[in-house]
Image (cartoon, rainbow, N blue to C red; front, side, top):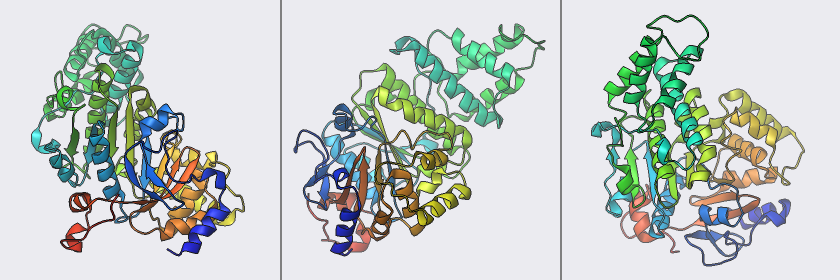
Length: 437
């Protein structure tokens, strides 16, 4: 990239929003260091420190960029460096490429499909700090899973039965107990709050899909058979989902695992946790999980979870080409300068009610295609003059938006990280090193 292109971006963007290097507030020594700012100084990122200091109001992040521009290498090196500082992480690995990261620290990745061990996504109500919230989360989880299994949302009477069953389970909520309670409710004349006529067998569809779910082995009877409590706060836990990626069960498995992780985090004294979801775009086409995931994303900060979603394009969240076309038209034809703040109308259209983009204050953009560069600038408050920069970014360089602060960062890998995490390393040959930290 030509140096004058950087100067042009600096001169056409609100300078007060660009930081002179290191992002953390109050200290130049907060780790981990990830690279250097083009405007001078080292760059480091710790979402939990930033949240504590009020720079951001939630620790979630999204990473966008074309294939081969450095998204995975950044994420792997970031998780490794955070782990060395005492921050455990969980990775949803849809392509089976994070195994080296886990093994480097002595942890075996878990092949979810081959393991045939289910998880329990429900929160233990009695152990949760907020029992009312725990019940609400359990209701959302049950409704989502049953909706996927049924292929439709539960009817009013089915919804009432699910809620009543969950309220009757005093300890150890799981799908086995939920099914047992639903069968009891069905035989006793239906939910107590149901005002219409009731016939025994009206809950047959619910019971059948729960039978199918239990038989699938995707859910556990009580505690997760992965025994998350022993490893969750001490490891880089990689779930290899490559055997499921692209199948109809993939979104369901992701939700079950996220629910189980959240349940453990809510009821145990664990350190702050990072959860990375690669190829998160694959979940957006399922309206059921998109709705559930939006709720999960929003509530994570309250229980000490920082989520990182990785996707190729911002338009993956639009739900269709119409929104993308609108964004392109607005970006190319409008003379409005968005450098003073994000365009909330555009963001709302992208969200389609998910709330995920609105609830994410850290955006990392590697090189993007022409249309996507304009989309991102319009949505996140960058001057349109930034779009050419996003198209020209070299591999390993990215634009970071952290709250109201923006940086252009060159990420550096150590020689060990290059060998382990850079997917191009085999093509580069032995002896090739990335720039040092």
